[in-house]
Length: 154
Image 1 (spheres, rainbow, N blue to C red):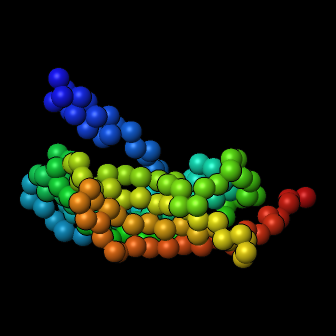
Image 2: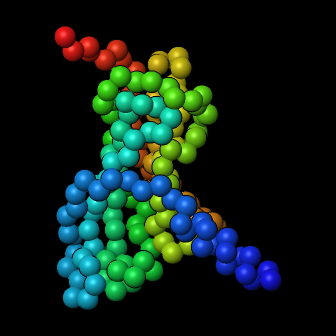
């Protein structure tokens, strides 16, 4: 019974992540079997802040393990968030709130983006980092968006 509950929880955790929109990719290492190693560029909108889109580039491991979803991707990622329209807060913001999460290994490793609001400077700050159940990585990327009035078309 306990095994069934544990397995169900693991499967639920694997299915619950939000998908980013694929913008493009480049191959970095040719693999004879399975897909090549590559760098992918993805975009996602902040779910609580209309008018903000983040662009994330990250390594994706190929080969047979990568093709089957069994490989562990590297921890490096780059993040650029931009104001793409009038900014509107759709709900109250929480400091350090997760706005994006994607698994980068079968079970234990994830890439996350969290948001902070620097009210003193009127800036949204986004931080991308990778973590594991046991030990995360200090590698990270940051992006800041000064909140500005958006020009109105006439």
